[in-house]
Image (cartoon, rainbow, N blue to C red; front, side):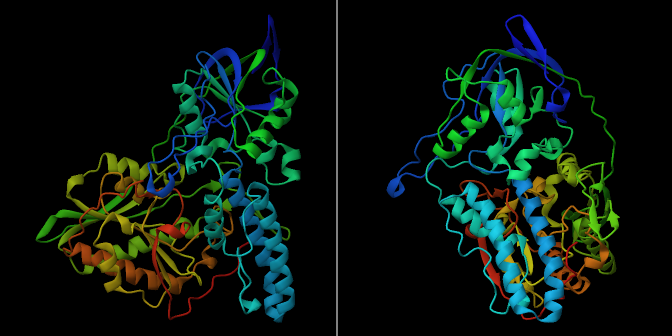
Length: 544
């Protein structure tokens, strides 16, 4: 990467920039333009049911980007990176569980009350930086009995989403922070290359801001290995502040980010007299990983198909992907085994196949173990795009992903919106004594989404994220085996009914679409209902 002023080209230090793993290959040069977040706000509802108002924020409005290099901020206006924030919550959950365990053993209610207040205060402090006007007083309340307090990751999401939706001014969709979305917009506007910067306000605390580490873009979004439309490099914010000045006022990137975040107004402008030269060569390495399929042929309705699926891949070991090490005393664990994600679904799929083999269904049941889910739902996409059976004969798809950590919050079942037949069937099957949340929307983050995109009814069974998600602590000793048995009875009841001929007509998505980036229960507005359980599930050991 080089900075060009007039006839003089200066190489930027290799420690200050990195090539995005999903960059397009090529060498490009052009005048530099600061494009803010390259974001556009979503239309907001008009008053009294009037038509939605026009876009009120667009970083690219009025810019000439043809043949130019765009300098763009990562994330979205006034919003941190979602995965970075989730990782921080995981860390808080792990530390809370470790400190809470001895206090619970001693029955120290006062100690737990103080621990809860300290942890809650830290989380609120992070959120308040990005949501200064938000009312977070009801977030993660202490239960009446402090000895039962748990740090539940998903219980924090609902209040945060509600408060974020109340923010005045432009509203930005869930995909506004996606680098792929930014690059696609910039390419369409004529840019020839992209320099991405995580501005100082996007970090969660002063320590991270000072460290100024590169954002982990290898799993930023989309399928791993799917190249962006343009060459993309990432530049540290300190280097950007030192090397680049924007507009006639020659302002620093950090100052412009603060202005954008506080006023929610674009600050896009050219970098006078500055051009950038980028060169990136990436050679993708592809490895074929098989989906593993089996079927039990149906009887009189054998030409109709029910797909029951679970992904069998995980994220590997430290240094080979996004797996991070886990420490417990002097012991270091560097392997992410994925007992919950998704050995739990894989094991249940095998057990259900055994059950169905003992009593032949009327419809054919295909049992699909998917590869490449963690790399972008690759295996399920391949099967949905080119199935070894007639896709128009598939009546429904049921997905099992992370069903091994049943706890007090219970089971979530997503995808109710995809067929009017689901809720009556689920009511008839019952809850096996479990607490169950019924979610209307179809989460985009697991394999069922690829079948829903083919206009097929889907269901998604899920027991929630936890502090061991995508970490080495996701071990078999954390699995709630009694919970798996209970969930298995529900999945079997639903699948058996469909496999034996129950009509499950596909329902077209409502206005705005049925797909949602959040996991079941994360948006209170899309929860159909909750049923409180009558039996107490076994609580799995604390996260590491």
